[in-house]
Length: 117
Image: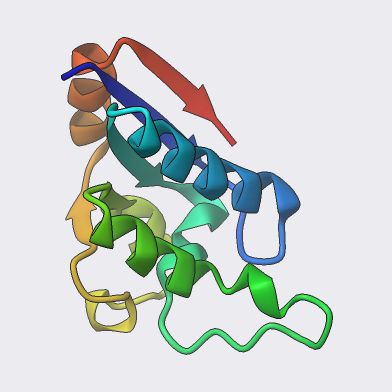
């Protein structure tokens, strides 16, 4: 199975990040293996307990990440980025893996395509 790696650097509320997650679902729909790597402020997307304001309720990134995991998308959070923001692993949705830049590099190397959102 061909693979794609998607690097998301923007946090919750960003339509760019939201569209990246939507694209991840679309790529799974055409039988690509998908890895989503969250780095920089993108790590906040995996934080449990998000409560988007009225009008942006659909942008619950943690909920979307859980849905993606349910269809086989691997989600990795940059451990250095997480620590730099004072976040603990327990704050992330279940099933999210902590990783490193080396994990991202390996995923990109294994992929046919890599995209950044």
